[in-house]
Structure formats: structure tokens, C-alpha cells
Length: 238
Ligand SMILES: O=c1[nH]cnc2c1ncn2[C@@H]1O[C@H](COP(=O)(O)OP(=O)(O)O)[C@@H](O)[C@H]1O
Image (cartoon, rainbow, N blue to C red; front, side):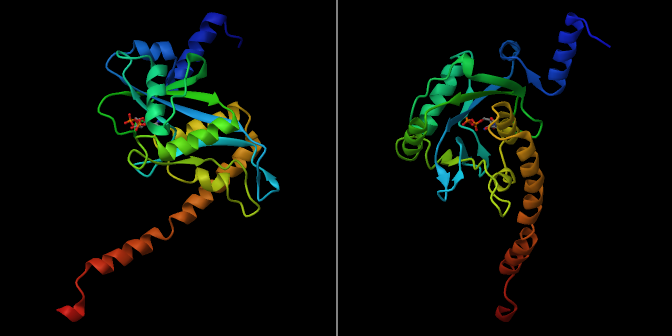
């Protein structure tokens, strides 16, 4: 059945609502919500891994204080500043450089997944900004030297490996780590949207990352037992 434009847009809005997605304007009109803005900064590169495999793109993420991977950014209060001004301020704190972010860099807005710890409804705004490779390298230096959050809220910037090695690691292993909120889905959707990795390669990487994830937690029960033993008072002392 062919939908009329009006019912098509109603259908589109319904689907967006179901996926937790909403427009930037709709989000700003919601009262009683908190807002968080994060950005994927990336550049192309001619660098090669081990001098032979093209790295193609540099994408920056960060190891957060809570041990989870996420994008730079943070909470913004739209009653005090625009979302983009707030994001630029957060970037200064986390990266040591005020990278101007504009409305044109905005990609998507969603309700935070239900699992996110949040006292009130949290709305996540996601941005993507392409930079020059030299600028990315300057950022990495500043993030480890002048950024006020370094070593506290941010433990370090990381680059996302976009290749899969012959041994099946690289992107699959990266995707098997733990991410904050919907950061993994923001990453995967950006790779697809910007065509940085083909959907076929991504599908393979995600399939493999599931296996890596299962294997990477196999030693946890044994480690738990090890610490249980250490906690018990030694029999020879009693
Ligand atoms: O990269 C991300 N993508 C999506 N959501 C994120 C990301 N990083 C953090 N969040 C969500 O946004 C909330 C606030 O973010 P963040 O911890 O960066 O802000 P803050 O430093 O201002 O406290 C987090 O509790 C988390 O739910």
C-alpha cells in the first residue's frame, strides 16, 4: 500500500518514537529532561599498520573513569547554553582544546537506554565532526597534557581500529568491549552512515566480536574462585 505524504510522515514519526529517536527541536521542547551531548571526531589518514595495511580513518573515543568506552562530551543544561556551546565546553575540559561544534554537526537525538543510571529522563544528542589528521594528533597530545579531566573523568583517548587482522581481531575485539549508554550503537551507525566500514565487513566484525566477548569472560569464574580462596583464613593458621 502506498502511503500519502501526511500518513508517511506520521508513520516515520511513530517508528522514530519506537526506536527512542526524536528531533533536536522535539528534545529541547521536552520539560524535566536532562541532556547529554557527545561527538565522534574523526579524520582520514594515509598511515598503514605495520607499514602495509591501510588504517584509512582515525576515530577518537575515550576510556572513561568508570572503565567504559564512550565519546567525548557530557551533560549540557539548555537553559544556560546551547547544546553545541555546552558540547564545545565539555570538549575543552576533556580534550584541552575548544573544538567549535555547530548544529550542522548534529546527527541524532535519542532517549537514553533504560539501563542508563539516571535520576530523570536523559536525552542523548550525538554529533559527528570531520577534522584534519594533524588536528586529531594535536588533540591527542592536549588531552594527555593540558585537559583538566585527564586522569580523573577521562583515563585516556583511544583510536578505534577499523580493520580486522588475519587473526580476526582489531575492530571485532574493539566492539567486544563494554561501552557507556548507546555509544557502541552510535559508533556502528556512524561507520555505516559515513561508509567508513562496509556493512558486510561490519556484519562480520560484529559476529566475530560476539565470540570474542564470550571467550574474554571465560576466565572470570576462575579469577573469582582465586580471590575467594585468598579471602578465606588459611587453615594452617587456625
Ligand atoms: O559516548 C556516549 N554515548 C552515549 N551516551 C553517553 C556517552 N557517554 C556518556 N553517555 C551518557 O551520558 C551521561 C552523561 O555523560 P558524561 O558522563 O559524559 O557526562 P558528565 O561528564 O557531564 O557527567 C552518562 O551517564 C551516560 O548515560
